Image (cartoon, rainbow, N blue to C red; front, side):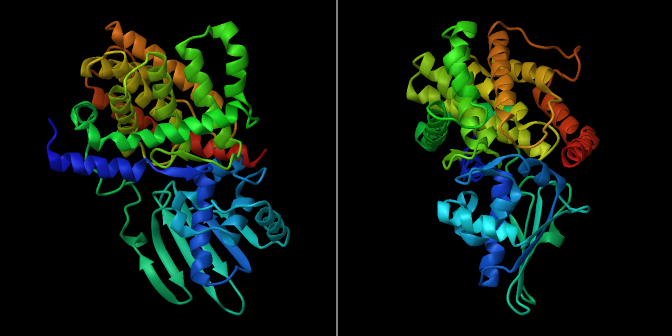
Amino acid sequence: MIDKETRKEIISLINREVVPAIGCTEPVAVALCVAKAKELLGELPQHIELYLSGNILKNAMGVGIPGTGMIGLPIAIALGALVGKSEYGLEVLRDVCPEAVEKGKEYIKEGRISIKLSEDAPSNLHIDVRATGEGDSSSRAIISKSHTGFVFLQQGDNVLLDTLSESSPVAESESEDVALTLKMVYEFATESPLEELEFILEAKRLNKAAAELALSGNYGHSLGATIRSKGTALFGDSPLDHMMSYTSAACDARMGGAQIAVMSNSGSGNQGICATMPVVSYAEDINADEEHLIRALVLSHLTSIYIKQSLGRLSALCGCVVASTGASSGITYLMGGDYHKVTAAVKNMIANLTGMICDGAKPSCSMKISSGVSTALMSAMLAMENRCVTQAEGIISDDVDRSIRNLTSIGREAMRETDKLVLSIMTNK
């Protein structure tokens, strides 16, 4: 049994990592940084110069910006300056309206925005915004390592905050994060007092609302709605059909620029969706009671957080690999699986999905998420039959935590050159 103090630390960790976000978190984080720079400047910037890490550029190029009908960074930057409020965090664009969008288009046409690749960014997640106003007024804001983590603030010549020089370029997770193992994750999710975990139901409420919006509308590639209308003939009226349609629909809404909040995980809305909706859908199909749903959701989200601790915020590895591994854990628990079966499901996931590349946030992310969802169900099924990929096969170790580190080291280290090539391809089309 995990002691009370450790439970408090884990709950604090979940509350930091599982938060509402409107729109894709990379352009939203850029808008947040711009909003802070504007607030420090005290006026609408005459010019905004941005230096961004490659992963921020990659994840912001092709995604819809909520409430605009537009894609990409320029409109997110313009709206961050025009209506963004840093106090809203990842809901910084909450006040976007048609009038603001029109003003944003003019702001872009006037050539007020300059976007450059930061060649020496200390983190894969790095946003450096420099704003200038009338006369010689200026400000600067830097977010690094986490989507809301301000590390440098400057107003004119006055430096208000500078923790950038103290930050390690290697460590991507928060220094105060509790060191987890999969055993700790499982015990926390299944043994903690239920009243301490009920907050996770907000993830169900937000992400299911996003799914239902997309199922009744036209967002992104409408994969969720297509599966809902056409999938029954191919997959049957089955848990797989329901999981895939719900999960991909929520992603359709988010990537398609719907003005709706989703519950994110580790700085990613898609990861939050993928850690939530397969578990919610399966729980509804089997008529699971609320306690089992809550514990399954906590297991899913905390497993995802645990994997991200060693992977880092942004990498060449698609986040659906992480979040669908969490979902498989939650589904296995709902099937009646114990810790050993959950470890089998995790190993089965790592044996299958490792290596799926991230080529930016975009509408087609819903297709990758659907691949993760189907693999999550398959891995859980195998685990419940006591079938697990063995140490003799590929990158899997007998120790599940070592298997997870094998996965994350590939995504964090071995795929660096992949990341560079992906960005080069994306920026030279």
